[in-house]
Length: 137
Image (cartoon, rainbow, N blue to C red; front, top):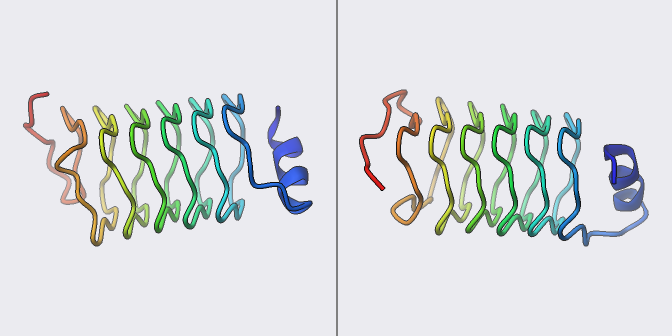
């Protein structure tokens, strides 16, 4: 599946994109609220300025994805792989990160309001304050 097909199907009302292969997809600025991308492959995807309110990304592969300025309010990223992802200035209010791999990810200036990162893998993660985590996992 490519980005254009996803956007067409989403516009037609489809919200189920489980296990979709969207590696390297460019979805910059897309509004994809309530989408189900559980298990989707989004490695190295261009997701900057995307809006994913209440999206389900459980177990999704987002390693190296560009999520600069993304709005992930209420998104479920449990068990997702966000290793080396760039989440600078991302809005993460009420997002779920249980078991999420955030190793080597950058969350500089992200806004994780009401977010629990205690169960996330944070080795070498650059936290919102700009400091690298020293958490060993």
